[in-house]
Length: 337
Image (cartoon, rainbow, N blue to C red):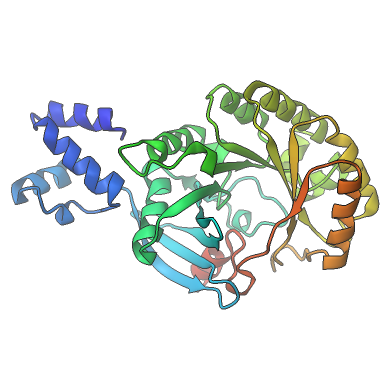
């Protein structure tokens, strides 16, 4: 709930306004996920709140820490026994958390372990927010950046994602600036069009991964509904309306989408657009059989884009020794359960 929603609920229960503020602070500022821990509330009030409300948070089921770069992979258990994943990454500017928006995913991208188990359900706003609190409390750190690139497709859970964004941005809560948030989509055009009207100063990341329909449809079934040219047209309209540069995510797979021809075609498709291309050395995912491109091939691909005047970076690969790719930890856990 937003603070105004919480206040209205407390008012309807004939509870004083300051009680709503106390509960809000416990949940939104401290990430407390149990009424029993709200020590400035009377025992009777805590019992009443437990009868009336449920706090949909998450708890750490499993935690893996990379020996290579200190990346932390969390497997979180939800109130109904389902599991999701989050990844905490440390950079020079601070800590960035990759959060999930769904249990499973219905997009079924060839390179993603999340889709292998199918779609279970959407996360509500508090479950998305709780991933931040859980990581912060576990590591005793402050998360400064959020990427919605974990399990699930954010545009397929649009209303809950928008509510989460407003909650995490609230200055009486975590107060995390929109410019420090990236939302990733596989290319659901109606969602991109709706997001453009929200007037949020976040970064839109589009999982492109191929310059044409033939390759992209093999990697991403969603392309059969929203083709590359149609998607790029919607992205250009988004950038024109918001004046925000779009980040195009491009995972590099050897012999699939990493040829010189692909680089040249990509450079041409993004000509004249407000765009940044983020090349990703893909983590190998056993379920897909796809392998990452070699460092030499990635370097050559980047050079072609740069020589064409495109803005390009190569993402540092993190967490390769702890199954940091989306869905891998949950998949192994549920198989062993």
